[in-house]
Figure 1 (cartoon, rainbow, N blue to C red):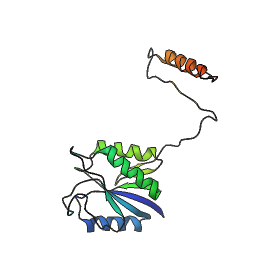
Figure 2 (cartoon, rainbow, N blue to C red):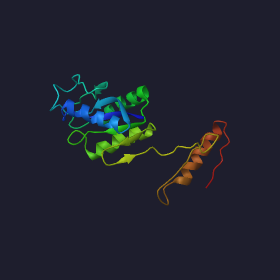
Figure 3 (cartoon, rainbow, N blue to C red):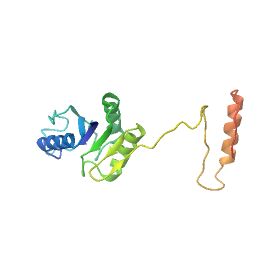
Figure 4 (cartoon, rainbow, N blue to C red):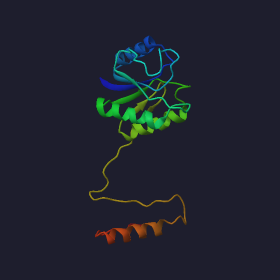
Length: 170
């Protein structure tokens, strides 16, 4: 059975969230923690202890409207480091988490090497094979005449001044 940190919000009654977590477990995904992203319509107060059957915590509130993605990503990263989940399951919805912020948050999860799933989508982290035994640097551009050669030359000269022997592949 795989494990999951589950993203939820206070716009749903805690018994409904608990039932959803139970359904996940019956389907083969065991929730190990829940992260409340925001919303407090159906809970006592934002930040209040909420019993959903697994340890839970809240993203700290901010003065700006909408989810503070960097703050949420920091809490989520801590949960990933502590729980080592196989996947992040997103059960939150608008207005707490809109599509733009959802994908921003998902990018942090994927960078950590963990999958991110919602009701109708699944994002998996890309493979990150080690492509070289030695350190490597890439200078890329999205078009012609963008300064790639000049930048690559400066990088090579800087490395040479630092005692390295760069190899430039054009």
